[in-house]
Amino acid sequence: MSLYTEVVETPAGAVRGIRDESGELYRAIPYAMAPIGARRFAAPRPHAGWSGVRDGTQPSPTAPQPARDFGRLDMIPYFGPGWVRGAEYLTVDVRTPATDGQRPVLVFVHGGGFVTGSTRAALYDGSAFARDGVVLVTVNYRVGIPGFLDLPGAPPNRGLLDVLAALGWVRETIAAFGGDPDNVTIFGQSAGATLVGALLATPAAKGLFRRAIIQSGNGTGAFTPEQAQRVTVAAAAALGIEPTTGAFAAIPDERFLEILPALSGLDLRTDTATDPLVGLSPFSLVLPTQPADSLAVGPAPDIDLLIGTNTEEGNLYVVPQGNLESTTEADLLILAERLSAEPESMLAGHRAAQPNATPGELRSAILGEALFGAGTARLAKVHAQISGGRTHAYSFEYRSTALNGNLGATHTTELPFVFDVADKPWLHGETGLLGPDPVPPGLATRMHAAWVAFATTGDPGWLPYDPQHRTPEVFG
Image 1 (cartoon, helix red, strand yellow):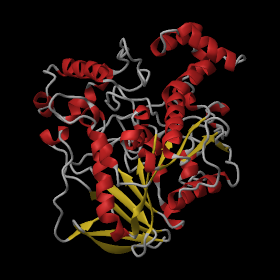
Image 2: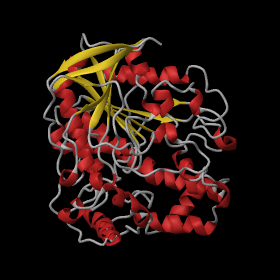
Image 3: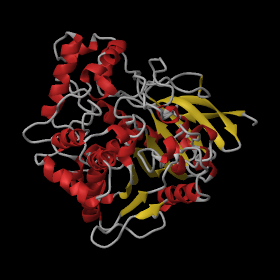
């Protein structure tokens, strides 16, 4: 593969990237000042720019984050390399067909449970989007304690503010990379999709994007302020400090990562709310009202939306850990109690829907519905009501053959098809995300093309969603 360097002039300064057969790639471009010291708990500030030509040929540092272990499943292509140290990690990567013209723009927000992830993950290779005439921007944002711990005197949801700042950078800068600032689609997966859902309900996001794609997010996944306070108190206790912004600002990032196990499994149930993340992450958005219930105050009524889930989302949290086989009826009851004031009724409903399911399969179904299914359905329904038919829904049903064929259509398995990298060898094998078997011919081409079409025109190729009459478009 031949590589040539290219230089682009941006409002902040010149940046050098590389050209290959897919187009041009510019990496590690800062959209905000480095979040160091006390700035880790402040709103992002615009980057001051630079003199000379900035090297955009190397990947960015990443937000401080722990290593993630998913048992027998290789999730490195999804999480990336973990914490790659460096102060200036509030950056974007830009993959473009060329810097002339005005092409549709896709801005991707990674997942990772609000504690991990970065633009360096192999799954987010934007070559196929550039090949098909779309500019792809991938975004790093603050995660964990700097990104989402709720602290008095600090702006809440700082990771979300980072994504807003990145969208502002796109608005001002993307034309230099051949993108159309008036044709921007923001899309995200998992935690990233939940952030996109929140942007739909954020007044400050008006005018920054035209379309949105939510892949396995949760429109009802925010913590209440009371729940967030429990996490803050627990974090302060684990660090031996007062729960104040000043005290946290004096703590190094290494210590924040060391105490994460102490925050695992906190009971966040209150008199008014269940734990929307079922104990899987101590961090989420912190909002007084769920995004699905406040879409009308944000840009949502004027935004085209593509939204969907995978049919076996919960398998990711059951199969790799061996819980498909080991789950008992007692485990199911404990899980149901975390999610419902009427746990027996909840279990009865799931058993009626899957009368032949094992306890492990029921556990997966309950997790999938709680983490992604219910919140996605609610957000899709509200958006369809307020946007006048601008909602398109999908369901991803292709079953990965990983882990003896048990992984199935689980969380994250749609990503290789959206990015058209499903044939890559690092996704295959018994412990690879897609398993040892080849994927169905044409599935990645079809799904990727739908995302490109939606970003270009707002029409992915099927009729808009109607909660009363139409089923989602099926990929699988």
